[in-house]
Amino acid sequence: MGFLKNHTFDEIAIGDRAALVRTLRHEDIQLFAAMSGDVNPAHLDAAFAATDRFHHIVAHGMWGGALISAVLGTELPGPGTIYLSQTLHFRRPVAVGDTVRVEVAVREKHAEKSHVVLDCIVTNQDGDVVIEGEASVIAPRDKIRIVPPLLPRVQLVDDAAPDAS
Amino acid sequence: MGFLKNHTFDEIAIGDRAALVRTLRHEDIQLFAAMSGDVNPAHLDAAFAATDRFHHIVAHGMWGGALISAVLGTELPGPGTIYLSQTLHFRRPVAVGDTVRVEVAVREKHAEKSHVVLDCIVTNQDGDVVIEGEASVIAPRDKIRIVPPLLPRVQLVDDAAPDAS
Image (cartoon, rainbow over all chains, first blue to last red; front, side, top):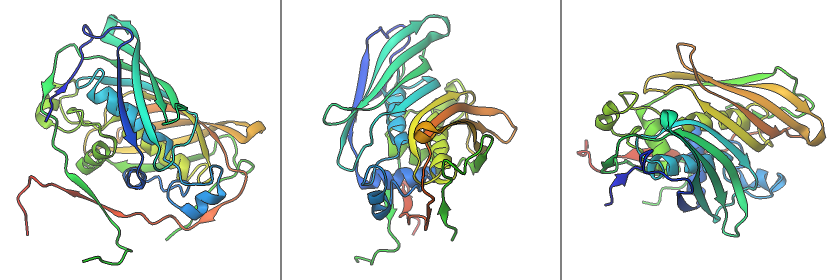
């Protein structure tokens, strides 16, 4: 297992980038809904979604926001980062099976308060922009290299489904 | 079980408000981390967090963003809403046991494109502002009243812990 490392304010240069790639599964939508309580049927009810603007189930827009937060908190700048603000423009929906690339790129550094501004862009497998925005953070002063925290395994249990056992 | 209802563009008035209240549990943080992949130790590793800026584990800032999305997607305007953009200013951390109130309030209506702008504010049990921001949405034209989608139950399974059975 790899270590989780950060990039300190001094190490960060304008133009530095980090990214993650994720393919949306139906379970990701269910998990976001359970976590947030956002049970908007556009994300969960195929019959409803068929009548809605996009004609099929789409991810919660803020799922992409959560992925941006993941890149900032684990990659660039990584552990020790303080999140100050985020803007998000939701340009296109994400459907189950779509593969998104979530990239952050350093645009500004301000030595006072170790303030860093990053452009954030989420694109799909066709290269279309799904989300664009801007993150503002305080970058860490100290180098951190740490074993990633262990997470419990998440199980989705469909109580309504027949028991397979 | 209640119905999920929306507020159409025509029904919405400047000053309309909707809110939810949620108390942060450790499991909420773990679930957000599992969902997003954001395993930043500030949220998951008590020993690390003790050395960090806030001296204890805090929620991911974007957890509050997800709760704002939940109010917009289920309450005001509710089902049929198209999310255009969101700004988030993270003012204060949220600790396990804190109770947050997530409120959206309609600030602007623009008949062209059924565009609605809402002020979003998350406060804690002391009345301190945790997050403030602004959401921009397309409000639904058609009234919707729907049985809320059924969600699978989420179980967090700690494979490292001794089996209690």
